[in-house]
Image (cartoon, rainbow, N blue to C red; front, top):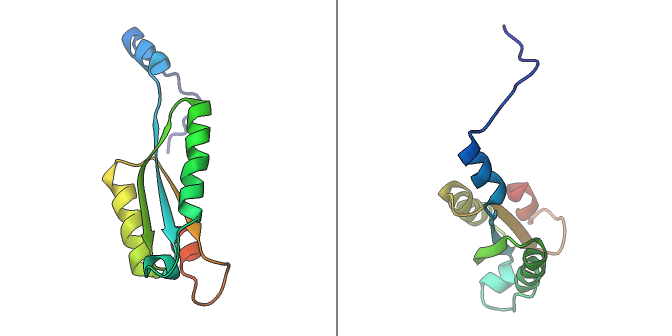
Length: 114
């Protein structure tokens, strides 16, 4: 088996110009996991707070935008489906999740998202 000890990578000059001068926009998604909010019995405060924080960070960094938001119940199939859709779809670079009140036997969110 060959072991690579040193790799020298040189981009063509046109690629270097594109790579270093083009702005990078990170496309983010925010997922709120809540049985209460998904059932319409409560108001989502966490998701909008995360979106607001990302907007502030995005302005400071100059390249982060929230492109997707969703609310799902704290159930493995619902969480896994939306995460798979976002992550496999190629339209999202970063996924942030919020919701729940902590670890308990009925909380699927930390285990599915982790």
